[in-house]
Image (cartoon, rainbow, N blue to C red):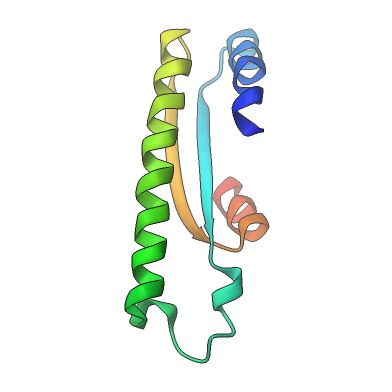
Length: 91
């Protein structure tokens, strides 16, 4: 669904003469109650690493799409609870 927003983001950024930051949060909220740090669990860490790599690849393609339209674009892939992570990044 977010990919459908890219043309609107490009249009808005151009109109405001603004740069864009594309963000993906690898959701680790379900892992906070795991009883031990998820970074110590090899299978969970592997999952998070794979999701991070997948998100970076996807966002890189969307970045190229924005930059082809003349919009300066950065990407951020972070882990955590999505809503809190996005708010923290915005701050």
